Every structure is written in C-alpha cells, then in structure tokens.
Image (cartoon, rainbow, N blue to C red):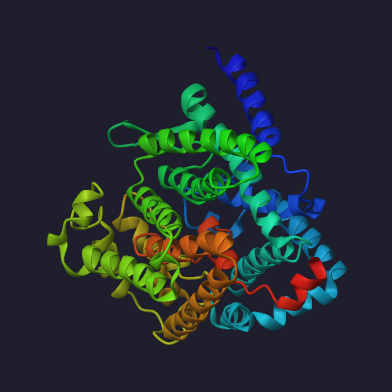
Length: 442
C-alpha cells in the first residue's frame, strides 16, 4: 500500500473510531478540546517539531531560548483554559479549595524560581506547568466529569495511536529514528523517541483497556458493541506498537496497570479496601525491591535490561555527586541548564536532559523540601484514590491504575514534569472532585 493510500485508510479508521465510540446520552462541553490539544502536544511533539521549524537543540544554550511558536500555541491554550475556568468560577473555586496539597506543591515550585540561575526560563516553565493544572480542572469541572475523562482519553488515543502505526509503517522519516553509532532503527511513532512512543501506548492503552472492560461487562447491549470494537482495535494497535517501541518501562507499567484494572474487577475480596491496599503497596514494593535492592529477583532481566538499567545507575551516581543545594535544589526545572548540562553532555554521548528517575529529578530541582512536598502529595493522593474507588469502583479502577503506574514509572523515568502525559494522568487520578460540584453537575 502506498503512503498516500495508507493515509486515506487510516484517516477513515480514525473517523470510524470516533463514530463507534459515540455516546448520545453523554454530553461534554466543547471546551474539552482545549485539554485534548494540550495533552496531544505533550504526548507527541511540539508544534514547531510537527512543522519542522524547531531548533536543532544541538547545544545546551538552545534549551534556554525555546521556540516562539510553541510558546505562542501553549500560551493560547493556557489562556483559553483559564477563560473556561473563570466562566465556571464557583465550581473551579471548589476544586481549588479541595485540592490544597496540589496547589502547595506548585506554589513551592513558583517560589523556587527565585533561586534559579535562570529565573526567566524557570518562570516560563512554571507557567507552562500551571497549564497542566488548568487542563485537569477544565476536564474535571465539566458538567459530567466521568464522561469528560473518557472523552479526553478516547479523543487523544484515537488520534495518536493510529497515527503512530501509520508513521511507523508508511512514513519512516516521521515514525523512525536511527542510532548514530550503528544506524540501527528505532521506532518513535508520533513521538520523537522510543520511550515517548511507549508512553503514548501506556497512558492511552490503559484508558482503552478500561473502556473495553467497562463495555464488555455492561448490560446495555446496543451501546457496548461500538465501544468494544473501537477500543479493541486501539488495544490491538497498542500491542503492535509495544513490540516495535522496545520501551521496557512503559510495557512493564502497562502490564501492572492493566493487571490492577482486571484484578479489581474480581468479585469478593478484591473490592475490600484492605485487599486494594495490599495489591497497590505490594506492586510498588516489589518493583522497588526488584529494581534497586536485589537484582537476583530477575525483574530487571525480565524487562530485557541489564543490572545498570541501561546506564541509569551510573547517571544517578554522577548526578548525586554534582553540587546542588540539598534543601532547595537548583530551582524549578533549572537543573538541566547552563554549566551542569554542558558537563553532562561532555560525559554522555546521548546528551541526557533528565535524571531518568522522577524522585531524583524533583530533588535536583526542588531539593529535599520538594521531595517532602511530593511525598505528602502522594500520600494525600492515595487517600483520595482509595476514597474514589469506594464511591465509584468503575472510575476508581482507572484512577488506581494511573496512580500506581505513575509511582512505578518514575523509578526509571522522570515524569513529574511539565506537560508530561504521565504527570497529567497522575493529577487526574489524585484530584478531588468535591461532592457539591457533583450535585451541581448532575
């Protein structure tokens, strides 16, 4: 099949997915397209990269400048999201008051701009980070928050997953890359790297698995056939992409999250809070033990990686030896700037721009204070996730899966970051939906 014909075919596939998953009984606002655009950009490529006008990023100095086009687009989406929240003033205010720990973590990030070596860059990045909260609130303040979450995941997944397959199969100049030292190809899909493709499969694959099982167990026969076909097709594409992405962390997390969604559907003990606690804590503890405390467990080898986690342990040792304020860090998103990143790029041919560990990344940027606030947010968030699971087990399954997966994913990747799909999924999982808002929206 020629690329041109394949493009038309996949265009029809995307349209068919949207039509099959329609739910005429559910109404979501048109404002939901704002977070769909935001998440789609974060999960794939910046607009400047799509149009081929992005800076080459061949030197650390180019990270300081960024892209004016991307800044314009993201600022426009942020402004649009803020206008929606202003229009939903009372409801948005309830959300802000109910989610203090999230605001506290982000406010500390704003304060940390003051001691950054590059405060202007740090402030721009913090402003973009506010966009993550704004988009989460646009989704959850929708008249039907549950339907809005479904539409967000479906719309974004229906676009990015088929396009990734199209790029990998028919547009290698867009969907593939080549290692510079041996020219062995790797697959990126709509992203710019293989781990980015794995992340797309992880986040939206879990959403489709959740919807597929929900439809499978639904008693509404007329509705469920289309949803089953749509999300079953996406899951098939996700598994095909996982085979090509070679992203062990994302595949492992998908199996963990998918296992949680499936296991919590069992009748009986799996619905008891104690069983959920044991399951969630046990998974995280096993991953910690297998990855860091005892390599003989075989977890690392089972993921197809060596005991150094593909060089990550050496990178972590190097980062911990670098000078940074242990209590307050380098400032919001400021560690990988200037002299520090120049030093790391001279030592590592693959030019790292993150710590490949979310908790270490927070320490480098925000110090122990930031780590403590993140820890508080995680503990508080877990309570909200369990509370949501008790009230609505269907929606609670996805929230629990995203929460646990985010904790595990950050063991080998840095995902507590600006405009990161896993970070946005984590925020969706832990954000409290106030009861008065539910009554209003109902």
